[in-house]
Length: 371
Length: 99
Image (tube, rainbow over all chains, first blue to last red; front, side, top):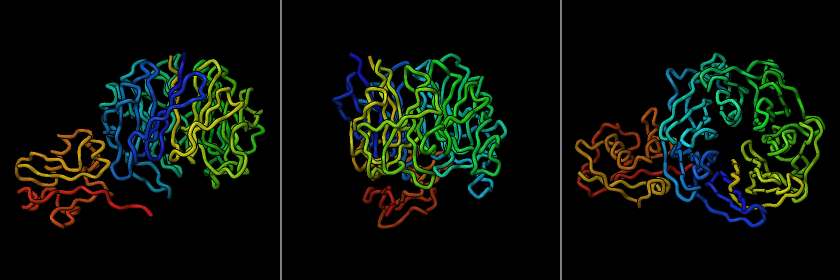
């Protein structure tokens, strides 16, 4: 029988939650790396027992962990992320030039082709790749050096490269997103890059339709339609059907279109999930009600999903990497909150249950569907 | 010579060691050669005490020995004699930070 393994990164360690295909009874393992911030963990699609984890600390810096047995044991891999050549500068919050400085790894994206190849999105924003299982890292410097880099500015959470999407039909195509620079695409395996932000409209920057400067919070893709992307921007939910050449807004009837997460149903490429958050100054759900919104039409028309979710006095947030979907026949949807809850819906969002209530604030959720 | 080094809890867990480790270091023994030896003996600690790019002590870590704060000492200055002769431990300490 199939089973699922949830990889949960929190402010105080990693947790691994497992269940069979019914997704009713869960085992909880952890905390792994107790006391450390675990920004992200993710398993290789080639070898599900190969996991990578980003372990960070204000005291001790960055550690990169790797497991070869599904998270039972871990070993530290390489943690040197050296910018290629002259690091240069980007814009600081006050508009002055600020040197690029490595701070932490936000997101790890294992390759679709081999377990030893993995991409890392870091703060200050850059994309790195390892081809030796995380022992050594090389920057794909064409992203930072394609021309707009000196104009990038950090968002409130830092200038992080938080989204990496690999096109399963074209190994040369990679999408990334950066707060607060925008979305970018490479069609040559990461050597050269172009901004793909046409159609984004951000009122909080001097030029609302600028080529870069948009605070993209997360981007999702269905593997069967890699030219269609869905974006939760700071404000606005967007989609593109031409690999980012043009974006259009699909916020439609959402009660608020601010938020962080966005994801796509595993088997229905036009079924989307977001968690609307009240505003950029009040990072909690509208009216104290935790509601996932689902669109079955690729956006514009949305329905609230509330069964099993708190509908009063709920003031948690759901951060950008804290939603995932499994690949079981009845698609499971998962998300974690800054209040330490991890919710599962085993029926594509119709009903929800809290797997755990009291973890540290959740930074990321990934799920592996195992045979 | 044998130098005893005390590590903060998180680094003990990361390295899989008890509170103290012993390092064999050739003279002259300085902060730099001690940290080099620590990272050689325990590669998983690379970058956790010193920033890998600048080789400077991480801001929230402090170095103590013989009742003295050595955090701002020259990294190439020889460590106190009582650390060298094994009577005292070189302490790497996480600073108290927070509310």
